[in-house]
Length: 502
Ligand code: ATP
Image 1 (cartoon, protein in one colour):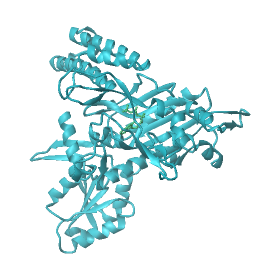
Image 2 (cartoon, protein in one colour):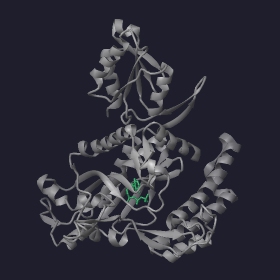
Image 3 (cartoon, helix red, strand yellow):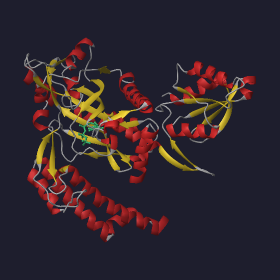
Image 4 (tube, protein in one colour):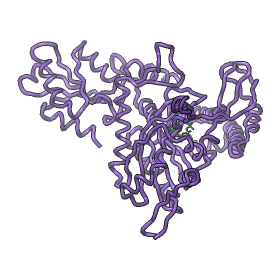
């Protein structure tokens, strides 16, 4: 699985999906650029999200707030004081780690051991295998389950109490070693704020320290009344936003899974106090449906309840996807109570209450948010789509992207570079290019061209041959089945349109 992950990182680079930032200067840690294919996939992901939120929900509208905001906003939101990661250094390797991530990895190790035992037994017993019974009786599984339970309880307690010494103690007791040096020589655990700061204004004017936003949500909170009043929105209503966020992540690893500059798609849903947990359940369900609608297999998604609730939340859950390196968060759904809006009332000194005409009273709304990283979703989509297939004579690498997300929808290829076929191919493109991203390809054999399109995930290849000039038909080849059929050029728009729309 790790091997597959390495291959897909290399694939992303080779086909213009993702490049390391500043590569010719040896790169910049945990910052990435999107190439010619990557930017298209990213845009399609954003559109898929935006349309599902803003077009499909009458009571959800959009916003695009600035990255720079008044510094007091981050004081009010709690980010200045509490947006921290617990860090620990290994004294021998001089490497820095997140203490909580080291412990999560240890939990994952116990889980992995249990899963290995189960997989071994499943192979041995075949159809007769009863997994539940095996897990409840096998001594090796039980021993690891016991270790997992004990560690999980201690970990949750330490997180809930913000007990840094407790985290250190766990790392010592579990004998967790530095992944680089193998040493157990750890420093104490301390807090590290994740916000990037910069200065606004020249020194002569008196510069002030401002932050690059670590989430887009606060731009929505401070604008919620502007939108509510000018849009005549009635509670319950939502505001959706897509934009960059910045976090000085310490454990920056796993490619674009954790970056220092990334993009979020967030939606804050404003509701009556007391109704937030019902809405939380509704959005949980809606968001899971959205993920599963892409067709990557329901079994690859699960909910994960938080070990520790953030300072603003009264309920929180993650949507996790089974990446090649295990189940990991793709999206967070949080019931943020009235925390943020109340804090902004207090710090700004302005009333930001909503007058509820049905109740005849004013209140600070409660908020349920859905928050997903564009880049993490990108990695999820690429991980789920990457396939190596054994064919009769050779192998092919194919990105089985859902057609709606694929960067290039169709490639149009003249069989040969003469006899008017290139001109015919261009005519087809000129007809379709307003609706679909098309690529013209005449180089190399048809077989090689198909492989190239498979590798970038193009769902349809259209080949123009001599018959096309006579009867205005072409062959259309489907990426996943590799089947081909002869169709009228006039029908192409309809055939492709049906598969790439939602
Ligand atoms: P994690 O536990 O992975 O650090 P988080 O719980 O801090 O994430 P949230 O603050 O809930 O994440 O952010 C919402 C979403 O934004 C996440 O589900 C993820 O998709 C995305 N995200 C957060 N941090 C990063 C990052 N450093 N790089 C890429 N995406 C991120």
